[in-house]
Image (cartoon, rainbow, N blue to C red; front, side, top):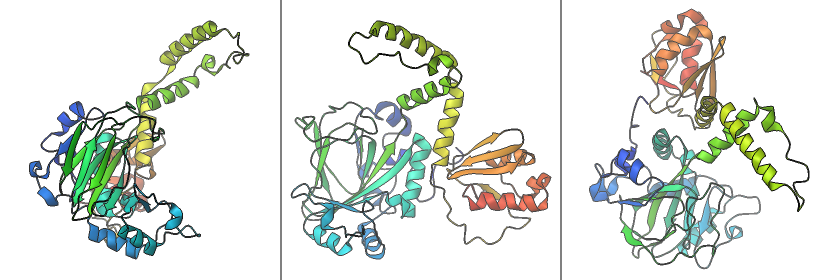
Length: 398
């Protein structure tokens, strides 16, 4: 990656300070919790998360924008809140009811606020560049002394950034191990036991909670609590294995054979099936093209990112001397079939004729380019190439 940090955002190193990126990935990621105090942060201290969001910004967002059910929700440990208490019959959130329930101890939850709030979108892109995973935010604004959820675990790892107020956290055991993406927490299925750690998150503190680790939190008396929960939605080795077997089956008639007839019967030959299974696994191992599967994973990851289109409407027309460069932390990959080139980027593919290859290679490598570099396409298409790279968020002006 060409740049390691977006302006105004936080790198993983800054988020987990004083623990460095490499130490975090090897010692903590998917293994154990990490509590980083604001006083140990390299920059910003107690105010380091305020550029991302604050309660005043949430007040402006809620009062000035309309929300559908699922775009804003409320939670309270007791008594619980049903969606019908704040969602109108047309599916729109009743913002007056939200404010009233907030007064009565409800936590306001804003899922995926990075879709509406640019600083959070930049923060997510920063972490996506590290984890090769979809990153999303959930915002929790809790009144003083209130609790939104009972003890539970999440099925994805999270970074909790305490922005305002203080919140008391308790961490328990990891009874579910490493839960898979679709595995939802079921109350009563696992006993939390006694807390193994208890502490208060202060403004500027960060808490990393690996998936499967049970936890709960209560805001301290005296002030509301605002924190950003940043979820890392990973692809697992099981996902990769399933895709590899599917890819191998395209080349292996053996893997496309049906299951033996009668497998539902009591006297079915299970040992015979085990032998077929071992043969199928050997065949899949020999036939699977892991590079092809990895390229598929890469392209899917790239295409499903949110493109950064900031500045696209305010920079003026493209001219012959306009120079552009790759936008920071914008992952991309070149693919060619010998006739056309696809630049795989956030949001989809940008197609070019084959003569653009050398200019695109320079662009992907981080070199500034202009219409002159695309001269082999002809004047009109050279201009169009620059315009399209800017329009779809792959480039910015140099």
